[in-house]
Length: 428
Image 1 (tube, one colour):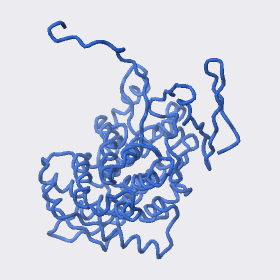
Image 2 (cartoon, rainbow, N blue to C red; image 1 turned 135 degrees about the vertical axis):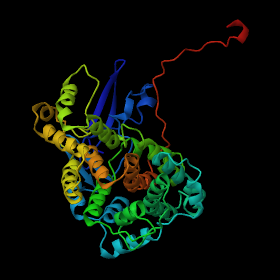
Image 3 (cartoon, helix red, strand yellow; image 1 turned 90 degrees about the vertical axis):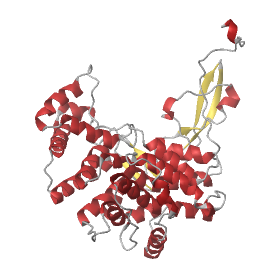
Image 4 (cartoon, rainbow, N blue to C red; image 1 turned 180 degrees about the vertical axis):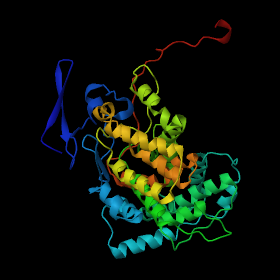
């Protein structure tokens, strides 16, 4: 709290409210008593001007293109740390030392298997079910199998649930893919890294050994780190809102997965790839660029610009380098990738895009990379959910531990019918 205040003039009288100051970023006006003092609500669709909580996990400055996890720049983490280090950092607040990391690695690796009855649960879905539909159902069902970690008042149970969710999500996602293509499920291999294990469970088969390509493994490590948390976005806010009611952690993460599924959120990389496929050929790019610049044309380029970042998305810089490495390693000839490269070049040099700061974002590059590796488009959002689980459980734990947190209850501006009497059916 600072000594600064903010005053509102309402009906001829001033109301003064304290201004709260974070460690970095804009100050916020504390309006918790606003309704009690004035009988008025504030109106903020999308909560874009509302701070719903205090958090020490992630900081974003969209104007400067800054993303920090517990103070560490995202590019440093993506280049130098393992995904397990980032998971530990988000959960506990500091990077682990060697002993802490070894213990954390061991704990996560011992929670990677799913209850065997869940394999039967998968077979209740149609073969063409979207992986996100399967993940919503399976993650929600975890609460029916792990009763010993659903008491949110017990810090130890909360920690066990967090470990289980982080550890099992790659297995859940890989099994969703295997089920869709009719291949047998592969059990986890705890000798592999978090990302290497996921790649093996997704693309390996029991008939032959699977060799993890280090370039692809490194690309997945970066993708997971870059998607691990992103402050109070829609899915994270959903997890917090669900958790504010006292719901168990598995139900809260299932709610986050459902929210992430939306094309305006986690489905953006899928939409970007579909756009590249629609363009289809480098020769057609000028036509689509002209449409993107035409204010009267509803078409817009997917994977360019960002709601938060008004500068270059710091995650996109890392992803651009990763895309170059993956495409060189795999030596793939694909018209979609040719379109992506040419569009990237235009967006970085065309005056229209530079002036409007419509740079390629993380969704543009991640879609290209995942497509090159061999993931079907339907798996893109599932991979996002896998990586974001770490941030969700960190945010959920922080919320549960916050003494100021209350059950979420947004208010509304009612514009419907006023009070009226019921009319019997025969008189209507």
